Length: 296
Image 1 (cartoon, rainbow, N blue to C red):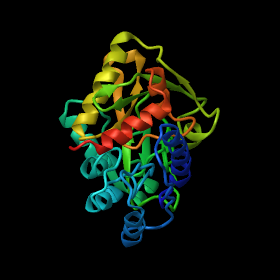
Image 2 (image 1 turned 30 degrees about the horizontal axis):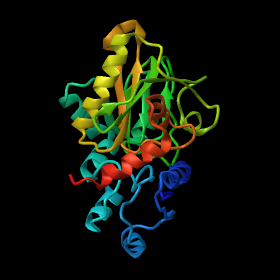
Image 3 (image 1 turned 180 degrees about the vertical axis):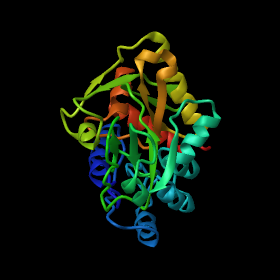
Image 4 (image 1 turned 60 degrees about the vertical axis):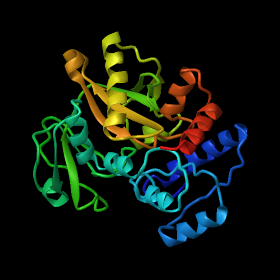
């Protein structure tokens, strides 16, 4: 847990929650908090532990994009969540969209543009969204509203190349997938938009489960989430986020992205959906550990 990404604090919170639940489930747990360790430093730490399985509670780059997964593969250590290819694919929003689109799943149009160009002019007609192509948890997201006169003044910390995508209006929905099973549909209700603070601050958002939506939309969310999980080659637990424009019916349901390392904090969505499905947190942790140990 921890690590060098922008989502370090979220990862530490997830890691603490998971470690406590794993102990309740009967496992001997060693908490490994990463700072800037990569490559040989991390290999040395993990090799000295002689553990049976690694529970990956890292978020963001390095921990979620296939890098640490490659190290664990090389060490021949079983680990939770998705493998190298699925992790790298899901973290690259453009390539993930290509895979989802090829599987017949609905995604919004987007382009990759230089950050300086995005600062200088409207790359798309507003409304649109600007975000890093390979970060999660709403890190570095700018919404340019309809009628905006000026392009967004992106922070200097934004990468040189960013994704610019058409804005998808509507209600925020999400579905977690556990293996081949979709757990449910949650609607996320916020005062503004579902940004980093809304995701991880107590009271930052309200989760309605099951979502108060028509049966055909709920069934489509469950179906699309499982298909997205499979299209990217995910393993273990994933979560697919949607926007639904209810004025357009089923045509208004759009996949925003697939998260291969869903948060496991007290305000996180996947544990809530598991609990609603009758799976308590320690039981979910046990399933993830046993799933990681299963030969693939």
